[in-house]
Length: 604
Image 1 (cartoon, one colour):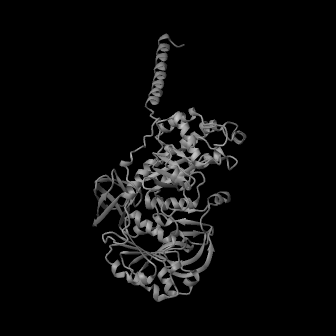
Image 2 (cartoon, helix red, strand yellow):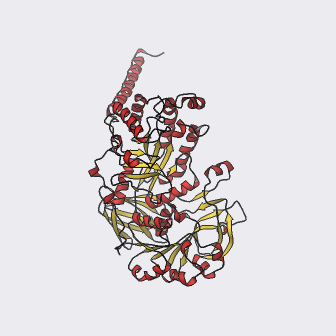
Image 3 (tube, helix red, strand yellow):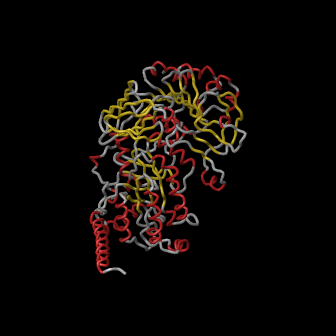
């Protein structure tokens, strides 16, 4: 039996707890400044396109490294190498022919380091005398990169060419592997096995190019990517190589048995090759990790028949009660920053209008999660973009008149420049879209507005997307993962929510957890870092195990990736370091002069 005193005590405690919870909710509501966008900045505070560091191709700087491309001017590999030179602040030289390269040999001697890319499709490999200049000019300060390889038949018929490529023999001019295996330590994010024994899972994930010539290599060759078979009689060293490193005189020579250097993969491969075989190498990165939910939430009652048939509830209830918890649970378990690209309506041709209460609910919740709210240009009706923005403007004016969008999601290029002049988008400073194979991962859309790609699909992730993620993280310390909520509002499968529920959290944990020491950002935060990255410049000098950086940056911090072999960071003056993985550090430069001291890796 409870005494009167205990009863009174319990009542007081319960009253205090109730009061605390009520006060907490009241204060959260009072302090939740969701009516305004915290990411708005004046244009005077932000670097612009005219501030970006540009290549001085007509007058190179001998203090910097030199990126040399040999081949036709319209090949994609040329643009990849040129863009990498822009991102890393190196010099760039383009040679149409091997003769042009040979004639530039004396000029190239003044540069402390060189990486020379050879577009194999443009070289006459039958003329041994023509390409001998590659061997003649190979020295310890040079890395050779073969962007694709000569035809397997040509390799088979030339002993001198096989020696140059590190090939002992051509085992097969064409083979089809069951998957690919990426070795540890080459790209950031570790090794990977791009195959699975589950047929259904393999069909969903496997989109890699698995057909290529099969070469047997010299024993001292280091292989980074190789084809694999489910054949227990084959040793790993016997399986077909795809990317490997050999030695040409004193130079490191990298062979790419495929078209990876023709696409954005090449940016990460070049960064890994530039650092490979050195005691240490340092280069600038963005340091931004984005999770972007596009076309979210649904705030009007639409597509009701299809939604009721699958989920037995309205679109608004579905997004609020079932989709939101899945998204937030996945977000909270990872280090990526969150941006939701809001669409007030999907169908502007029907009579259903967005609900103000729904908007206010999500704006509060997103602000509590420190997430950004952007605007989506997506729609399922034939409504012109201009009309959509007009209707969205009316809705925002009547609900949150002071809110300014700083990010915009667009699925179309036509009319985009004009749309950015709309009053609703006056504060937009970055535009995001689905990645479509661009070789320059990000840049400027115009003088004031940057563009960012959604590099991967967080729900429908594939092996090719994973390799691209590793390459872009290696080169730029950047990623942007998309979750398309439009698939749930207008289903393209039997149960898209279940697909999201089973895929998003697992993919983020399995594939992106490896980059958690890079910083999670919203789109506007990554926009600011991209602007700083493109505008920044730096000089480095080394003295034994000491690296000194002189950094020019428009404001705030600048970030670098330091790759080491057998070394670890002892101290950083003018900044700080974070271990990314074995042999790789993130260096934050907080001052203009940064001194990094290394020491030998201690054995355990």
